[in-house]
Length: 196
Picture (cartoon, rainbow, N blue to C red):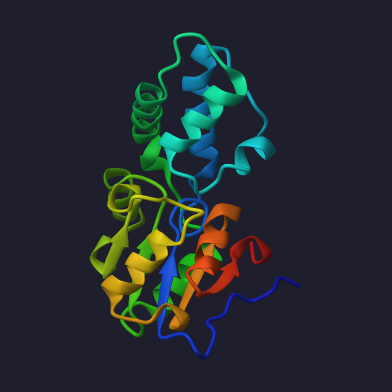
């Protein structure tokens, strides 16, 4: 029997990652990476891709340059190419049902924020596609912090915008960098991979 996703009784605010947590975007991101990086002779497995889940695309591209050392690879330029490729496919986004149901149950009952390693344009469009953009109380993206996940900055800023102490925030995450960041922020963390 599948475990039921729940909110900790101590939680006074909920913070959701978007990609792979609230929205089932990871397969689409993977396809976008494969399409763009394939032009540079780079290919990797789904499991390898998941190790980078939650890390902003800019730092991801820097890591790929270090690891694969492709020719004519400008991490900043390739990051833009990848995000544009993904944006073309964003309309197919579906929710991660157990998380989406929990979100909808608590929307309007507890303060809710979004903490993502993605950029603002993509985060907002994803929430629009899911039909919940009007329920956004706070959103922090990679553009809003100096240090993205796994640093705690994204989560701490989200808690500040919500006006809730970090220790009373419950974070829902699917990626190791995000889980580490939320723990470093002193928050309660739920790894949603155990529930889907």
